[in-house]
Image (cartoon, rainbow, N blue to C red; front, top):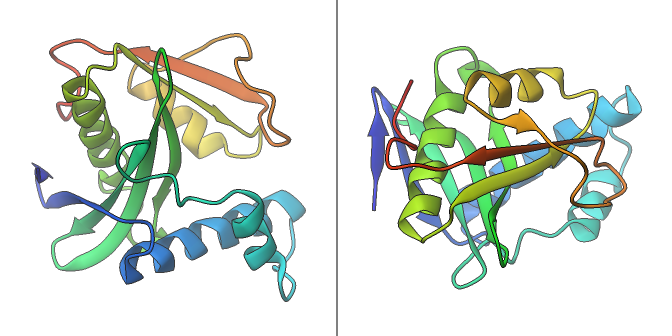
Length: 170
């Protein structure tokens, strides 16, 4: 299943796909840099990837979507299937492609996939320093909820109820 939103196209891939490993490494590099407010030190990104692996973002436990903007590899987002919801993770748009609808395209694609898989809602957790991500989620109908997870970096929790209209670009 491929979903297009204007010039954005998403496709599901395995987390070990070369483009996926590249984007997941870029995602984690940004998470490390923003968390520590300094450049990543040797081995930190690899350690973070090992601490929070993405290998479960494949059937049957989840999925990983890559986003292309035109011909460019531009972002990713993952879903993990939980008993009562789909959990959104690894939402990342490369800096050169920010501000032109990539976040919205990724959210629309994961929402459509989650709804098609029978999920009634999507949840996620995020950190306080990721203000742009929190604003993106709020713009697209995600509301803050009480904590449902207790990860070391979880500081804000969001949820969105999915309906037949979910997954369409706004």
